[in-house]
Length: 357
Image (cartoon, rainbow, N blue to C red; front, top):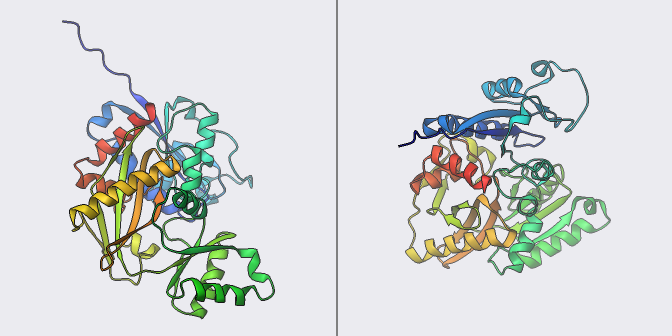
């Protein structure tokens, strides 16, 4: 009997941080991913290199990345010990040449929106998660909604505008009339290209609506105004390459008025129910819609799809898709798979294996 040849370790490059309002969420997600890649059987499978992207978009090696992971917040110039005012990607940091598979743990613009995925494609290196197209469409709420509409998927009524239009004469009056005619209050005002509820506000009257428009325009020129609905918030995850598997359906309950940034990332501010207490037919419908949503934008690897369920009307609405879902201790993506029998260590290993394909 021949002795078993030890399998060569795969070097995984975990990239986190980024030029985004979700910078610190990314750091916390990276902590979870790195711990899982370095735990249990994964210790024998992977060599892990961490790469930090600061707020100016500069890429830093593992020695600096470790500082960010330890602090849990964005590093400043003193931490970086680098007086240069250059911005953006200049070159891959030392050690990156060893990476076999890239694992982006980035949220928001310049990371989740196809830009980093495009860089990996140019480098001819495999990476975890969706490609350029799905990442870009999934990040932009208006492009996403257009793709879902084309696929015939159920969505809440909405309309869009550009922030520059707010300065036009009579535009505000026209907008208020449009809102009244189409669906009225309550409504949500959202920047098109941010996640984690950053920049999103709920409006129950004209004053709150105008404030919401101002807040959204601070984050993006493209703005979505969407009808508010009293409904249960449900989520479902996918995992896989050409063949996607769906998780159990989970539910999030909270005491806040809506599921904002603070509620999402504060301890004990929301509760997760897995699996969600739903009629079998509703759970199956949500799982089916999850697969349809991924197909509509060509999402692969991993994704989480969020839904509203109006119980009295037995109506399901797709809220959005997230192609790079969070991995913090409060994040639903790993929690959904945990409830479906996949541990966090198995989950990250599977994502790397899928990227290899």
